Amino acid sequence: MTFAKLTDATAHAAGHPWAVIASVMLVLVWALAGPYFEWSEDHQLFINTVTTIITFWLVFVIQATQNRDTLALHAKMDELIRATDKARNAFIGIDHKAAEEVEQMREK
Image 1 (cartoon, rainbow, N blue to C red):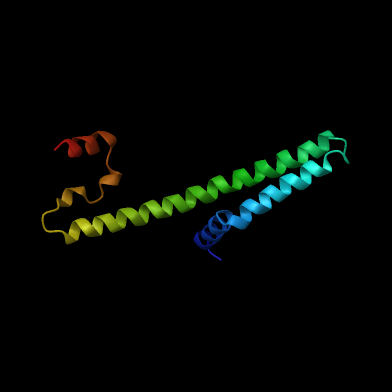
Image 2 (image 1 turned 45 degrees about the vertical axis):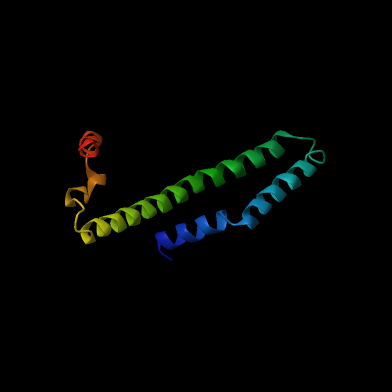
């Protein structure tokens, strides 16, 4: 499985309602187990570690899917500029220019 397919599948799964339900269930089970483990440091460490690892992974998954979405959006916009007679071709690839150049083009 390629990285793109893996990140797409992970992002899709993380955005599914069942992922929210599973996360709520995990926290409920953890909370209900608290008295049994006497709210020990290991018990607290478990939820802290699990949530930190999941958050860490999802940051990279979200960034990868966002990067791909942004590239696709820019390609589509460039194609629309090319296909429109009165559009200025100077705007094609504007996302690769410095912020000052973009601002100057906007002001024109």
